[in-house]
Length: 447
Image (cartoon, rainbow, N blue to C red; front, side, top):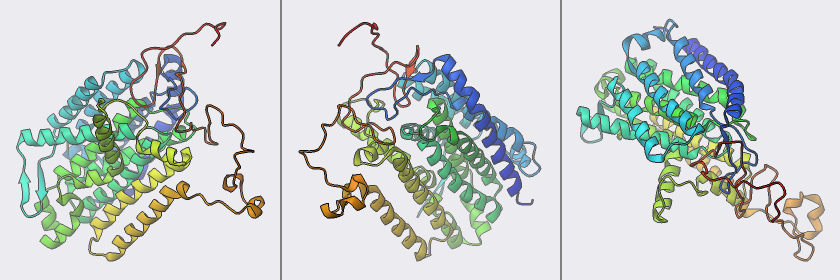
């Protein structure tokens, strides 16, 4: 079989094009349907913005799988495996749940149950973890119950990790696209580098996921014209989890041992997979870290783990002093560093240059992360040579700060408190539950 690079590229382009073209009509539909978010104190956008962008992303997913099923080389993926059908079934359920939540709101426990049902549907159709390789023990075969529980746990964690990180314009779609690109490189190498057909579905899922994110991203960059909502964030989280389950739990380590030419070579080739489920966790390391920190933070305060707040990583970047766009780019940088670093280390984990490169880039990332904390102040005699933000402002001449300050990116200051701004009939927010009470005021009322 020839390497279907052109077929992957065609699938990517079709998925991205369909998603991009559908997003405009979906935005108009969301406005007409009243699926408009309500501005609240923890949000970082200023104007009501429609969501339901997941409708366009689901259309791109269906188009990508449909085109791939009719291509010469990729057609074998559908003939030899039921995983694409399992993915589509689970994606349809999670997408429908997300649409209902975007429009009317769904209780957190109901959403959790729906996520588990969608994962269970995929398990029933064969998309499940069959075994895990453990260092020092070898390949451990899982019972059907163990495989089901582990698969459902991985799917639910990934879905909620992506959903939690969806708090800034273009953040979730960009980070998932970066992770999908890194995952594609790994799965493609497993398929064509070692001739393992079981890695083919994961390769296809990664390409389709990249297309969904790339097609939606132009509409979602700051200032966003539409949000993907839970219908989109849960959908791309499930697609990513499906690829992780496929390549982690379906690829036989013994087969890789034979293809790689020996135990040592196979061990080096499987570095991200050799610890159970390490690869998917490294690919989504930043969203998972945000998820874990959010659960610990809210539980420590005696709140529900699903209660929305302004303590996410991207909120903290804004509080440090980064603008909206710069905070998103920093999150992109760390996602790319961790994801591609894991893939590069799996290719040649004996190379010190790769390790040194990752360490050096990590140091650069830390400097960029803390840069607003070390904003230099120039001497007074040289203030005319630098932009105003580097000049000293005396308290006597400094104007009194208004109650609500906005930076040049349109981001609210960290200490700002805002009242809810009604948005249409049914208001919602990009993150968290929608407000159930909207204060209606008469036009002639005075405060």
